[in-house]
Image (cartoon, rainbow, N blue to C red; front, side, top):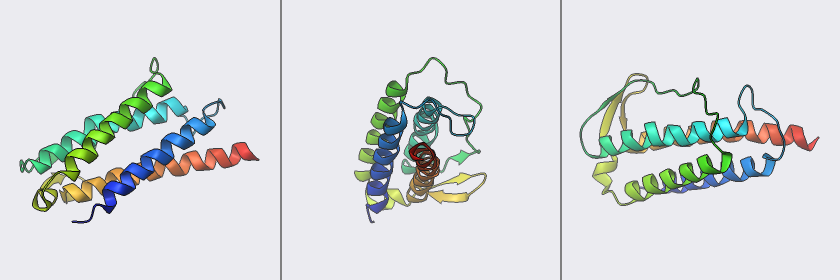
Length: 147
C-alpha cells in the first residue's frame, strides 16, 4: 500500500498552517469564518471525526457513520495557535497510527451514510480533500490581500 496519501496529508496540513500564519495579521474572514474558526474547525474535525472513525475502521468494527459537521459551532474563546497546535498533534497521531498499520488493516471498511462502504485509505483521502478545500479558500484570501 502506498504511503502517498499520508505524505499528502502531512504536506497539506503544513500548507494550511503556513498560509494561516502568513495571513493571520490581517483581520479578514473567509466567508463568515475567521482564521481561528477555520483552524478550530479543522482541529475539531480531525479530533471528533477523522481520527476516531479511522481507528474504529482499522480495528475491524465495520462502524456506521452519519455525516459529520461542526460548521455551526461557536469557536469563540479559542486561540488560533492553540487550535493549530491541537490539529498538528492529532494529525501526527493519526498519521503515525495509519503508517504502522499492516496493509490489510488499511483496507478495512466502515459504512458512511453519504459515501457508502469506505476503507481507511478512502477516508484518509476525504480528510485530504477537506484540507485542500480550506487551503484553496486561504489561498484566495491571500491573493486578495496581496492586491
